[in-house]
Image (cartoon, rainbow, N blue to C red):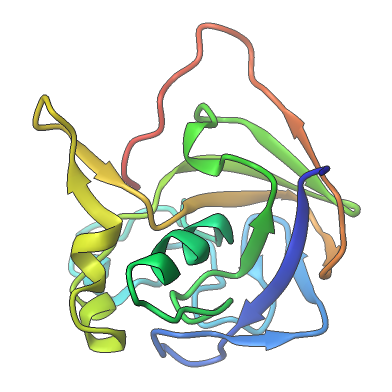
Length: 179
């Protein structure tokens, strides 16, 4: 199966979950038009306390639908948009992509900036969910499974069914860290 988009989601207010829509419009350097996190500077309320307010490296949140399958096996019934992602994908290991990978979706281009750092709000959605998407490997390193974040390099509409083309950056690859 070719990597593709299975859902697109947005919320005009700072709600945790986003609503599935027919398409989203990505704006260069801003993010998802009409979404509360759209803008040149960070819009996440937990990060607004930082001075100066940092550049928005979290314009678009992408999440692999395979996580839903994994969570379902553990008794969590999660659907696209509920974890707050803008783009739900299938057939791509988002977490394994290196930093600065470019994803071409329709006419839009997103550059990956890092891993989403999941927060306690996941437990407000479903009790125990945070511990299922945030864990540790055998060496004590944090494992984050709640998707990746990116910036919009080229705008355009994205809708379910769009193929995703992956352009890896030049080597050496840099592992994704939290952003």
